[in-house]
Every structure is written in structure tokens, then in C-alpha cells.
Image 1: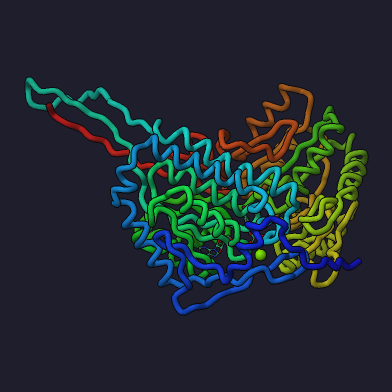
Image 2 (image 1 turned 135 degrees about the vertical axis):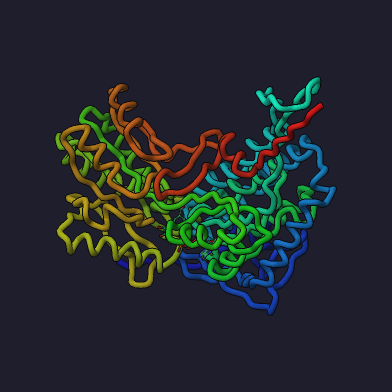
Length: 504
Ligand code: NAI
Ligand code: MG
């Protein structure tokens, strides 16, 4: 089967104007610039293959200029001395602007990334706005402490007065992936701005458009020059330069574990602070008493949403042997119900993957599993040789040593196997170097919380999967990363503590 999808044009005048006004430029100190040297690269609609726009291909010189602008903005009174409540208002205004332009941003996101309109418009663009709203309220609640001390060697008759102050960590390089482009940018920008940091944002080269449109909205919101700079371009050039740059104080990264390791190495020069949100291979454990009416659509959504291009996607299912056949049959039914098509078409449930290359990568995993004797219960096919579409796939009989069960595929593919005892399910769930998330499906409260306690993962969902909110800390144990995003903990990563100890 081959999919032929004609080019789609956005309907909103905003998205039309944005795409017409190309090549897109870099944002440095609130001004739009061509790349040094004038290079550009193309971004495409992965569904139709149509060219969307040319984008400035940032160089190391551009990355350097952006860092210099961010460094200067850090001590610019317009930003440094902005009252916390005003910073909060600014974040709130950014949220308002994202909401006011939600249709347009959703069109750009769907065109550039492929995801369905529902995913863009109902889920991710509103969630990006919510990130700014959540941290808007925090901006004037960043508190130090006064601390009684037990120091005994101060001069007689004197006292010790000690307190802590919280300060922005400084210049942040935010490097984002292509799976949920605007949301990932918002998850880094909102806490960074709340803390008073300045930022150089490098969006993924596959999906730069919504970050650039956000840049325009940030200027409209009144963000002082240099507080957020956006350098589009390639990871090996712009990303590598930022992560090694001595004037960058922190890197906030979401992406592959492989690049995460490179960033750790690059950051050692000036011992940058790092938050790394890396890969995952999240298990879903389906206990013998699970309510399949809840578990089947829930597990299906956990793997197939955004075509499986979700860091926490539930890509391994461990199903009690008493339910196995019914579960595999039911999940295959869920998978085959999903309609593939252009993300902007109203009857589309799943768009393409981000690129034909990603579809080829997913196909290689599935083909290898087939050759190793796993059973394809649903899907398993790429829709055409050069296509970015891959059908939602359920693979049963997957052994623990197969790559299908071990590696992050980042596509709509779930590997299923069985267990008999809860301890066995737990051992399977923890048989991974990753530790991002997991879900447990059961009606037994005690079993649910025992499993939650035993699973090595940053998030455990009970009778749901991929439930997110800015209030809930999100991060990886093991090789899934360092540090947390969201919640009060997400803000901590953008703050330093200064202890002041005085003899008075
Ligand atoms: P990637 O890790 O290469 O890309 C993520 C970001 O890192 C992009 O902005 C990229 O330009 C940047 N980058 C690349 N090389 C860099 C370097 N040397 N220094 C600094 N920044 C650099 O991910 P890629 O290759 O696009 O996807 C490959 C696989 O990674 C996916 O199939 C998936 O398994 C995983 N991935 C996981 C994500 C997650 O949310 N956990 C997101 C994206 C990819
Ligand atoms: Mg693209």
C-alpha cells in the first residue's frame, strides 16, 4: 500500500503569512538575522514531502553571537531589575499570545512535524501555554531562607545572621527535539524565564517553525532584547557549539541518550549545569484483574499517540498470561481502527512520523523482530518505500533480548509478552537501562502501589499512561536522564543558591 498525500496549505492567514515570509531567520537580541554566511536548509511536510520553508542554517558564529546577546541581557537592568511580579505578567502574556494564535501554531506544528490536528490543537499547543501560566505564578514566590546557625567561634558579643538568596543560573542553552516541538521549547523557556535566566534556544532541525513563530510572539509580549535568542541549524554544529561554550552556564536538553552522553562530555570544560531528558522504553504492566475496557484504549493511547514519538511511550507490555490472548486481540483491534492520513485532514487519527528516515528506522526494528520469530498481530508495514507513514503495530511473542524489547524505537510499535507472578512483571519492567516511566493496570490498590514502589522510573501511572501536567515533576531515573522538569522541582534546575553569612 502506498500513500499519496497532496501538499496541504494552512488555512489561517497567520500561518500562511509566516510561511510566505521565508527564508526564516535567526533571532538574536530581538532582531531577525540571516545566518552568518547566508546558508539555509529546508524543512518539509513529512506527510506530503512538500517544501514548507527555507530556514537560516546557523553557524558557530551565530551561536556565539546569541550567547553574547544572552550574556549581555543577563545584566541588562531591563531584565535583571524587572520586578518578579512583572516577570510573572510577562509569562502570563506569553501564554495569552500562544492561546490567541493557537490555530496558527497548531497548523505550523502539524505541517512541520506531521502530528494530527487534534494532537497539536487540543493537546500540545494548549499545554505549551499552560507551561507559561504555571510558572507565571511562581515568579514572585522564589524564596530564600533565614537560617539559624550553630557556629560558635564568632567574636564574643556578636551574632550570626545567615540567609540564602536564589539567583538565576545564568545563560541557558535549551536544545529541543522534534517530537513535540513547541511544548518542549515551552517546558524549558517558562521555568528559565521565571527564574530570571536568559536563553539561547536551538530547536530540532526537523521542526523549527513553531519555535520561530514563538520568537515573534515573545517580542510582541515585550521580552527585553537578548533574553531569548533562537538559533536554528544542526545539532552537530549549533548544538555542539552551545554545549561546549564557556559562556553558557546550563544546558537543558531533551533528545536521544546518545546525544545526552555527548553533551555530558562537551559540558565538562566549564562544568555546566545539565538537565537531560533522554530516551525511554517504558513498560505497561497488565495485571490479571485489569479492567480491559480501560486498559486496552489506555495502553493503545500510551503507545500510538503522536505515532509513538513520545519519550514516555509505553512500548513494552507485560500482560498476565490469563489475559494475553484477549489483550493482544483487543490491542490489535485498537491499532487497526486508527486512520492514517495528513495531520490537517479532519478524519486523521495518526499522521506520519517526523520523516521518511524515521519510518525507515522503525521498519528496520520491526523487520528484525519478524526475522527473529516475533508475531505481528497488527500493522508492521511502512506505507510505501519513501513514505514517512508507518502503521500502528502490535508485536507479540517478543523475547527480552530482542532489540524490539530493549531499544527506544520512537514509532508506533508495542512489544508484548507475558508474565505469571507480579515479581516476574517487576523484574521484566526493571530489565532496562532506561527509567523514564511506566504504567500499571489493575483494580487492586495494594498491588498497584507495590508495583509503583518497585519500578525504577521517574513516573508511574496507575490505570492511565502519558498523563502530563505542569504541576507534575517529570524526569528520568537511570540512563533516562538527569534532573526534573515541571513542578517546583523543574524551577530548581534554573536557580543557584547563594548563602550569605554575616557577623553582626
Ligand atoms: P537527537 O538527540 O539527535 O536530537 C535532539 C536535539 O539534539 C536536536 O535539536 C538536535 O539538533 C540536537 N543535537 C544533535 N546532536 C547534537 C550535539 N552533538 N550536540 C548538541 N545538540 C545536538 O535525536 P534524533 O537523532 O533526532 O532522534 C534519534 C532518536 O533519539 C529517536 O529515534 C528517539 O529514539 C530519540 N529521541 C528521543 C527524544 C525524547 O524525547 N526522549 C526526542 C528525540 C529523539
Ligand atoms: Mg519538518
